[in-house]
Length: 187
Ligand SMILES: [Zn+2]
Image 1 (cartoon, rainbow, N blue to C red):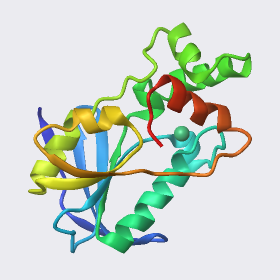
Image 2 (cartoon, rainbow, N blue to C red; image 1 turned 135 degrees about the vertical axis):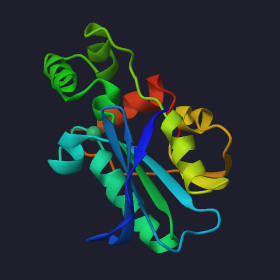
Image 3 (cartoon, rainbow, N blue to C red; image 1 turned 60 degrees about the vertical axis):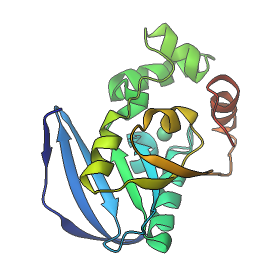
């Protein structure tokens, strides 16, 4: 992997005072948000970009709630959020909006992806191991409901899985149920 790594900068935010470091992997630029005084076995959240949720506050998913929860928890526990730029479960923004258009006609999130020729989830996590090794982190507590993330982080010991539980709303209840029933997410 040819990865370009930025310098470390301060990022005061509404969720806490963090350090940030960017990792450029080909066309994709990821961001690591972390506390200077990292815990010896930090709580780590791996968050995949969701422009509509993270920035616009879309109620179709629970991404923004999860991101805010993870940043607050990082501030409280000296943890880390790895923000991966793989929009729309890695099908990109344009395809994601096309999938939303199909969902408007009654398809669920998985059926819509399949109709567009994609897997239900196209995300990958190889870069996570690279980033954790870069920070010399050998053990983590992983904040996730997604078993794929647990299985895909190699060479790092996950000593504990911490569930991330968000309240559903009327727009995302079906989406969250689909993640649980059809995609094996744990709660
Ligand atoms: Zn989302």
